[in-house]
Image (cartoon, rainbow, N blue to C red; front, side, top):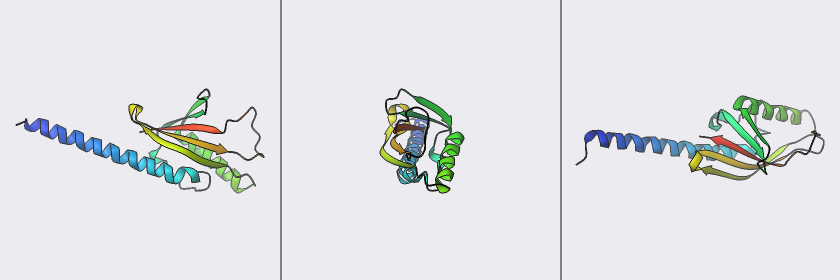
Length: 133
């Protein structure tokens, strides 16, 4: 028979693991449901996002780390711009996966900006967004 304290610690560890797995599942489902609508819906659930979000192009050469509030402001700006003009950015979700080794949710998306939006330099279409959990 084991010590009562060991059993209690095992139960606490199991509960923490179950809670963590539940939250990862909730975050994955929220991203799967809401990320494609990020430019069209104003009440996106940002609670599943990390405080810092890393955005990089498909080659992983160009990276930007930004605060969740800045990311949210950029998305809102694009949403407002598209509502008052004929520009309609879109986000196509290609893959969402949980990487257990770094406890991160990685989203491979294709952000399509209309031809009417001109940005200096070449804008990569494929971004990876990382959400730490």
